[in-house]
Amino acid sequence: MRGEPEGLGAGPASQQGMRRANLALVLGVIARAPRSRAEVANGTGLTRAAVSSLAEQLLAAGLVVEEGPAAPSGKVGRPGTALGLNPYGPGGLGAEIGVRHLGACVVDLRGQVRARRRVERSNEGREPEAVLADLVVLLRAAVAEAGLAPAGLTLAVPGLVGAGGVLQRAANLGWADVPLASGLRAALRAGDGGAGLAALPIRIENEANLGGLAERWLGEGREDFLYISAEAGVGAAIVLGGRLLRGARGYAGELGHVPVHPDGPHCACGARGCLEQYAGGAAVLRAAHLAGARGDWAALVADRAAAGDPAAREALAGAGRALGIAAAGAVNLLDPAEVVLGGGYTRPAPWLLPAMRAELAARVTVRPWSDDRLTVSRLGRRGPLLGAAVAVVRGIIADPGPLAAPGAP
Ligand SMILES: [Zn+2]
Image: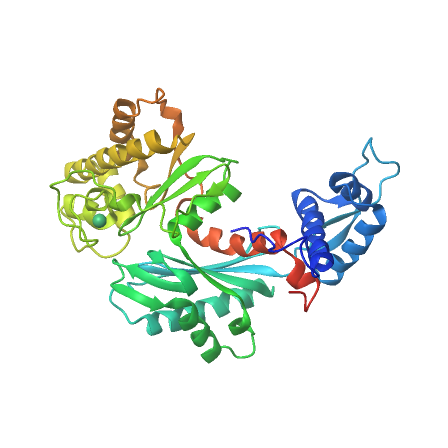
């Protein structure tokens, strides 16, 4: 997610590159907590003069604001005026296409949610153009409500995303090889009405990856964990050393297609006995004798389980066993500190956890498993959409150059 400035310190562009890197350095320090210019200089090793000049650029770009006196610090003489992230500066626009919902969210530079919209509707088998047109209506409403100008847009999707913002496969939507980034831009242009959204940088990202990153950024400071979520299918994100593990082609985290039973049911991916066939929302509904039920699978099954329905409880226990088997393999392979259940799993978690814990305890043998390493996300279903919006502002903070110095490469 963090865009690393490229080619710094080499060739004729090095001076400009150095300035861009220093803008990121200064903004990164301010993003952690409001700081006076003197404190920024101390924290970065830059001279006071350099920090003042860079701060002027960040102020002019609307990325930071003067916040009044900084807290007195023993290391600095008199307190200066603190610089903080500008809550009215450029924001992040997040969007989500789910199998059964659409979402839009705007966060400010500090990561505070300024507007959030969600509509429940089945998108399965619909034409991407029609879904994108609906999404644009939602995005425009969220931006109007937030009153912030977004600097970028990230769209969360339940599928494999390839180069150039192409959704390669989203089996549960029935979509394959959909050029979503260009399609979304065209839909934004058609419905723009002067809001300027069609000109934004657009990024398409797997929803489980964004759910995992939201856990990293907005959760409890975890740095090494496996995040597992489910809607119709199963998604996962691997975060190690605070970074998302993407793999050679960006497809890492497809836990839903890790085999649980070699002779199990056929999966939409072409293989057999994948985790998704036991623990995806559609599979859990089938096991609970609710196949084809409309609405929110997780709420439906959790409500039945809470009411004592034996089929719902057995369906969730079976999903928990399969999750435990697949997660144990991942834990033995990757040694994450924690396994975090998120998304659709958060509500039925009380009926998933016992069987999942038992499998993890029996199968994680590299080092003894302890139950406190299996946790449930506080962000729940909001994770991927929040992650999408926050990814934009994290990108700005990691590399403010393009906004702070218009025309810079
Ligand atoms: Zn599969």
